[in-house]
Image (cartoon, rainbow, N blue to C red; front, side, top):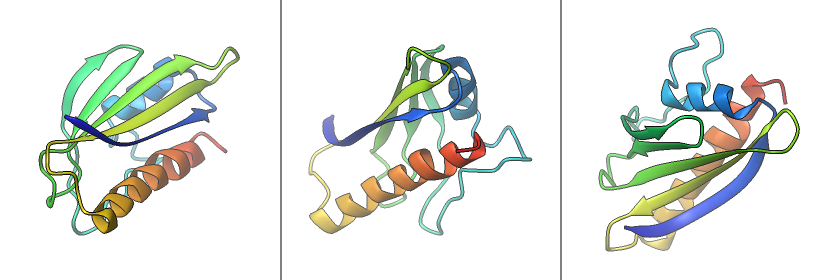
Length: 119
């Protein structure tokens, strides 16, 4: 698979908490964060190695081949360094679609998820 994008940011919660939320994104009904658009679908958990790795199936009907990999590590304090990586099969999405996919991941992970932890 080809790496189509990646971003690392900190999350205020510890790795085991972030792992649990990513492993079951709809598990906490009181704090919903995986708010999908009409052209998106809930991910399936493909791989998990607690507390350091999660791999999701595609969120996008247009790119069912896509995978989202999450690498989690302690930030040295109480939080998590979380990197998402978008992986796709060839051909690489056109620039417009690729920009949309990257932006959505960034919104979901580095905005929506982060806000559920109070940041």
